Length: 153
Image (cartoon, rainbow, N blue to C red):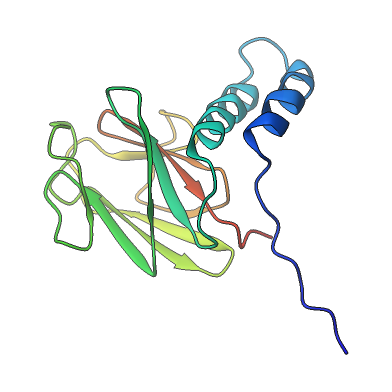
């Protein structure tokens, strides 16, 4: 009988709080990787248990942390169709700003000719298309999204 592979799970909030200072302490002050890691860890600590499928997570203007399953494709913007993520209050987002498509352990981001552009991992890294890995940040409008994929490599 062959053993079924076990899907890795994200650490619990308590585990994140315990290990994060050690990992961040390895980077220099202002290190972009440490800053990104801290942001992702903060979101994960507040999200709790996530589904076993790729999700997009973000922080609302009131501080609440939310997530949405991506499925095979998710369009994000100010006024998307019913299956997309509409954030009408963010006037810096285009109506259909970007789309994420999942492909196994990776995702693909495509900017949909948005007015203000989309960036990956740093606000300066503008992208028309990009491969996404688990934990990548997406800057669009006034939001910073995190691509989370438990099917990661």
